[in-house]
Length: 286
Image (cartoon, rainbow, N blue to C red):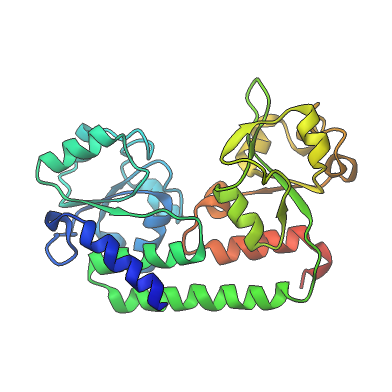
């Protein structure tokens, strides 16, 4: 692991309460909140310790049979504690905070892992989960594999200078679509895949107007598969008032990908980045 990343890990570890330190926590019965964390536990071979997951934990398919404790940001203390966990493993956006406090007040430690949408952030997730589970060697092997895959993609990306303009839409609803700006997981995966976020002038998500979409002129619209299905398919999406005059709509270029794979920033992110790279650069498909 890179020296500066190790230093960050040590600083984070120092901030974790003693009750949740990797050396003292019993992880024999885990509730996991965070889809990427669930994937990591499975890849480390410790899936037999999981007694429940949150609803963002959709992969691998085996998690379908596990009890669910609610959405990541809307957990129920009663639901979690009813499963008699020895520890809760959660990303730092799990909550609400009052529920996390309530769980900890009963003596059940909550191991909080930072959720940063970068490759270094993924490595830190893996390292902290592996440390908590007493599987440091397996964790390092997983990190090495992720870094090798990203290095291979970087070499492939170096063969082209084309950076298509991409617009990610989170949801449609009844109003204007929500579009991703800077500081989002969508912005990060677009960059990793050799694209250019055409809405990089603001932070987070905001409603997309017809004027803003026309000015941004995206070459490609990127969305989660479920959102496209709920909207009635790609043709229905590209026919929206906000999109119908864009180059993406004119050329019929909409890329739909599994949401957890695309935005989860877990161990499958190299796979997601390469799939998106190929979709953005179809002439490069091998």
